[in-house]
Image (cartoon, rainbow, N blue to C red; front, side, top):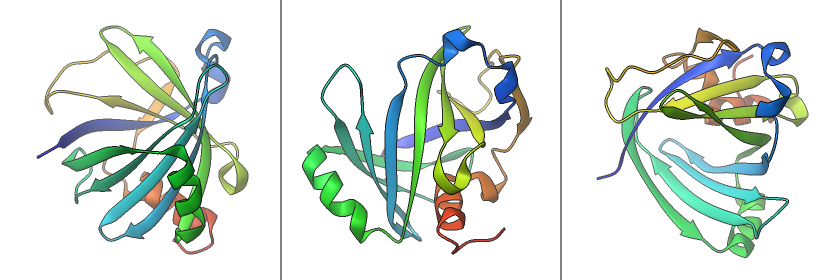
Length: 158
């Protein structure tokens, strides 16, 4: 069984160095279901072919089951209109200490929101926090991507 251990933080975008905002991938992320979470994701890059995945996520925040499978980009494009909610973001990968952080800049109805995630191999694994992260929101369900997508579609809590 696949397991994801991830901590999530709000970001002070004004403190993110310009060097961290390079080579971002444009993500279109749609939710075929939100209970359980079944996500289709399309990543488009400036310098290579697009990639896509379908992901099923279990319940939980810090640690949860995750099953992810690569699919053709054309299939992802065809699935997005079937989704109950969709969000758009640009994802940057930023090396900080021994970890690579995913830094997400949201677009559309979520414009102005930035979040950062760090994947860990165990719940108590130490990691270096970059200066641009602020409050931890790992356990705040409002900051899950599915909740954000539903909010952007006018279907979730404010």
